[in-house]
Length: 189
Image (tube, helix red, strand yellow):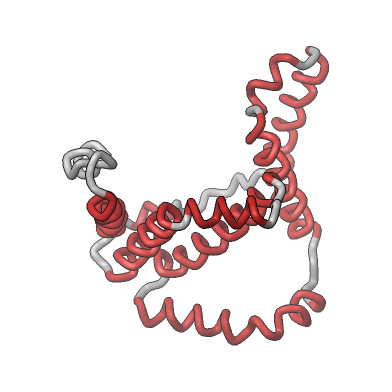
């Protein structure tokens, strides 16, 4: 932001230049993560997502109004689309090469028709079910945060509710936390 985006004019320029600034920052952020085409593609994909989001904001708003899509449903769909697009970009970030990334994506694409049967035969362990429950909890908190942040709501609650929430978070960290040392993704840089 400070060294590139603002000196390039940020959003105080023409629309085409603004979109170019967005793309340039994301591509350079990919390069910053490593001198490999996988990182450049990762940054470029995120830049494309940002620019397409900006370009389609008006259209998406009109479609949502025309179809009378509830705000909560729109937020949920937007969150799911964003999650999947970012996950797709992470394939490039983690792959050893561009060909490896495309190999992974092609295997995913070829598995999509079999997804229902794969999902039905998957051995759901307690950890997987707990993960799903935590994802649902995070989605609920995210939806509630759009109206008023959880951390703004909490002080207004009775002391018993506040401290119960704090202790529940602490117990969750202790019980389901992974405390083994693992190499952090950025240790390779």
